[in-house]
Image (cartoon, rainbow, N blue to C red; front, side, top):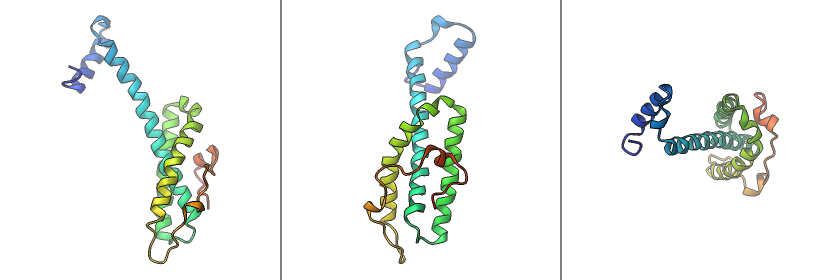
Length: 151
């Protein structure tokens, strides 16, 4: 059932747990799914941090960008900051993983900011890769602070 119709397998497993029919549960698959859920939630946290940090970097480095571009970066920072805060609210244990998640996210955020910076046009300066810090310049508090935009 698990391989043929995952949703049906999940529904049956939930029903078996509710009925306390523990001998009928496919424990191996259930444990696999529970482990994967945690991994997916951590990937979502890192993904949201990546976008948040990338746009903070662009705000910090591309100071000459027009307000229309900066406006979308500010909006993205706000949206992804809310997502990170929601992740931490729903899974408070992620707070102990936050420093590690930021370190993971920063590497991709840096690449993203550099790639997007190379697309600058219409007289806007294209930042060089060395214009960006090699280590995350933002503290956890700044990343979570709804009023911080790094400018």
